[in-house]
Length: 222
Image 1: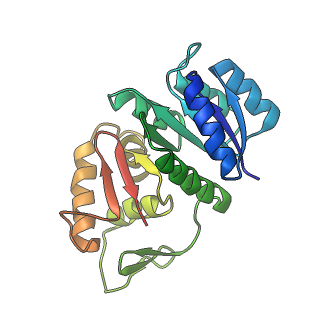
Image 2: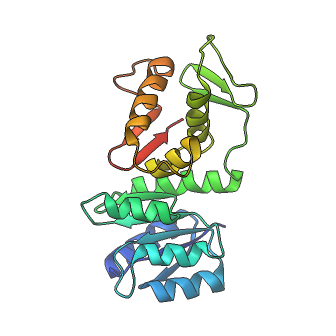
């Protein structure tokens, strides 16, 4: 049984998530603040953490840092803050995904299922990934239909495809593809993502698989 630690200081959210998650077969632990959450995680070793950013005793990214010091447990952030900077900070700290408050339970459950699948698979190692009508062979660097990609396009595409459903921040993509000295050159990402969509999406103007999360990063939706 998958064990989920829910961290939130709003009792009504704790209660709603406990009821809905248990009804779907999850084992649920709860914590009202960051310190309690860190102790509960160390004691019970959850399979996934749902974490509110606005906690009474510490910032959510501090909790993430505390967890990431010893565990790779998937973390889904709940954020009631309007701006994207807090979400980006949380993702850079090691969160795997985010859901904005107010949120629908069905959306959160879908995110939980997606993150759990990735975790159980240890991030996909499948050499062949479907992208719409195309098949991308990551091992052979080939795509059906004789699509040709440059080495940089391949690096960018491969990083997205190996993390299906996960939001990859702009900073992470720049670091992985262009190197640690590149942190703010988001125009590179826009240009290369546009090129990938022209080559791989059926309708580049309305992409279905290579998605932009404005101000934050990109996501591959299988």
